[in-house]
Every structure is written in structure tokens, then in C-alpha cells.
Amino acid sequence: MVSDEEARAANEQGMAAPAGGQTPGVVPAPIPIPVGEPPRKRTVRWWRVVAAVLTLAVVAGCAVGIRAAVRFLGDVFGVTEQGPLEPDDWGVAGSGWLKVAQWSGDGRYLVVQHLTDGGRPAIIAIEKQTRAGRVIEGYRPLFVEPEAPVVWLERIPASDLPPDDGLGDTFDHVPDELLVWRLDGKSSPRRPASLRWEPIPGPGGMAAFLAVDPALGVGPAKIAFGPSGGEPPAEPAYLRPVPKGTLVPIGWSPSGRYFAVEGLLGSDPLAVSELPAVERPERHLYVIDAAKGAVVSRQRVQTLGMAPSAVWMPDEDTLVWLEPDEMRPGADSVTAFLDVVALSVAEGREPRLSHLSEQVEAHDVVDETTPFPWLPCGVTEKGPIFFAGSSVHRVDEDGVFEIASLNLPDGVPAWHPEAGLAWATAKYDDDGTVRVIAYRANEFGADSRVLWTGAEERPSPFGW
Image (cartoon, rainbow, N blue to C red):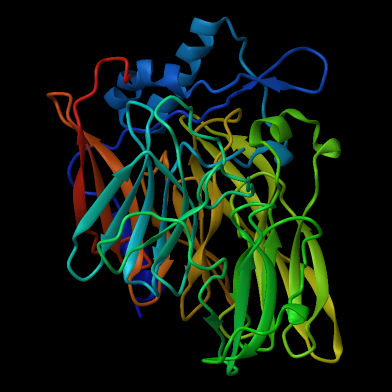
């Protein structure tokens, strides 16, 4: 395990920065627009027009370029500058524009959600061992199973705009056609033979069995528990923690007694983001006692943003997640401060909610008016690691530590104990060629190396 001193030294030497040139960003859409009296409205799907000014961001290759592009778009559309976001609006309203990375198949495959410069959704699947990658265009990934090499996805016709709902956000929807893609073969996306996820085994000899209800969305809607390696339980054993909704699993607690999930919203992300915070639907985290088959704690979590937002500590039955507090603008960048919330559960005791005295400082946030992603990447031996803004933080028994800085204005990294930290970004060459590059590194972002390069494009100046 690398010491904190070594991590700081690695960051000072710039080891976390991806090799191969500057990394441009993509301006998130929709962007909040003031309309006088609340509720505040936002523009509808700017991303096709955003492509027209990507070169502005490419020149700077950093958050400064993104800010310049945002201001330029505001001038084009005659939009006055939006005031600072309230904490409830920090989270992204749908992840469709982000290059979200997630490990699948117990760390064997890296799955990346990608949006081409031409505005077409695509999925990149990279095998860790061989570094071979496959790209399928015209599909949007919606869920990646953690244990099985399976992606749940939908096809997006060429004539349609891709939905704002994407991989790893707090939303779900009913697609026109539900498909699955197995990564451990040469098969193409097809209709699922079963509406069940492969079981998720826990440390206590139990497994979680999750089932999909396509009438509600792509995510699981029901969950039951049984012995690892056994058959799925009968239908009466299944729980529906989220009334009339779907969920995303957080996973097993270290003791193997509890399993946590988070509810998802079956609403349009843009429509929800347009509502005042007090009128938005609530989203909750649920802790289930697997032995009793009952929910023992329900906690409200952020409506907008990424999901799951919480993660278990590595050696105790305590969930931690981040809640927005305040933004502080500096001379050249904005820092967002997020509280660390802890929920401790134990047999025979009431669940206990608390706040850590230290905060996560998300550096180089685009600006005070643009939502940004934060989420748990995974769990290390010392504690869970969170990505926020451009920085990676670890929460452990000694406090909160920034352990890496990644130049990811349009990306979301993933962590797996056996596979490491991984992320994807775009690289623009002088001749206009753009390609996606995936990297792997240790938890400190150091010792980074290219995992895969591909998905090359030579777009027109306007990206369509």
C-alpha cells in the first residue's frame, strides 16, 4: 500500500495527469438559465450546438476552456450569466454527456459511456488483460453489472436525440427495447433471456438476487436473498424497497448482514432539474437486513447527481456519502466543499447518522453555475475513495485526504481493488482527429498507463 507521503509526492510530480497531450472538456447540457422569478428554467438540449464551440475548449484543454465556451454560448443565445447554483442544483441532471467509466465482470472489463463529436451515443468495452476493445455505436449503456460481464442498454435510432438519462446517474426510464450485451464473447446486444441480474455474493455466505421489471425501467426493481451458489428465491421472497420504482445496488456491508440500495427516479432529468428543489421527487437510500428480509433504515439522498452516491466503509457496517455545502470562487478556479455523511448500522442498535468534521474539497469545478459529478469510485483497504470535481479523495479513520488530481472535465473514473483506477478522456490532434484514450492507474492516480486507444473521428468543425 502506498503511503500518504508517497501519494502527495506523486501528485506534486504530476503523475496523475494523463499522458498524450491536453484533454479538452465537453460543456454539460442543459445549462441553467435565469428567467426572473423561480422556478429557474434551463435550455433544452444544447449539446448539438455545444459541439460548434468545442474548439474553444480544445485550445485551453482545461476547465478554463470550458468556462470560456459556456460564456460564449451564453452570448450566442442571448443568455445573461446565471448566478451561483444552490447546493441542491450542484448535481448533474442526467449523465448522458459524460464519459462514465465502470468496471464489470469483477474487474475484468472496463465499460465506458461515450458521446461522439457527431452526437451519437456509443459504448466502449475494454478487456483488462488483453487490452482489446470493442465499440458499438448507436447504443446507450444504462446499467453495468458488477459481478457478471453484462451491460444493460438500449438502442438509439439515428434520427433520435440520445436521452439525458445515462450510465450511473440518478434516473431511469422505460426504453423502447430493453437489451443486454455480454462482454465475455463475441455476441451483439440482444434481448435478455432472463430479467435477472447474476447474483451478487456477500462475505457472509449469502447472495443478493436482483430482478428487473421492464414496466418500471431498466434498473432492478426487486431484491431477495439466499445462499451463495443457490437458485433464485421464489417470487414471494422478493422485496420492492422503492415503491413503484427501480434501484441501483450499493452492495454488501463488511459483515455480510446488510445490503444497501438506492432508489432511482423514473422522470425526465431535464423536467426534474427545472423544478424548484422543494418540489422535486425525493430519492432515498435503503439498508436491508438480509437475514430478516426487511428494510432497517431509509435515508434521503441527493436528487440530482450520480448513483449510487454511498459506499460502505471497508471494515465496519457504516455507509458514507457526500452532501453539497458551499462553493468558494478563487482567482482562477472554483472549489466546492462537500460534507461527509456517515450512517452506522448494527444488530440490536438504532441506525446512527453523523457528519464528519472534515469536508471534501472539490477543486477546479468548472464554475459556480455549472453542475458537476461526484460519486464514490470504490473502496480501498484504508477507506472508500470519492471523485469530485477533478480530485480523488479517500475517507478513512484518520480523516479526509485528497490523494489524486485528474484532468477530467467530462469524465467519471472507476475503481476496482484488482483492476485499479480507470478513466477515459478525449485527445484532439492538430489535424482534427479525435480519439478516446482509456487509462489505468493506482488509487493515487500515479503510475498511469494507457489501457486502450480508439474510436477515432475526424469531425466537421461543427461536430455534426
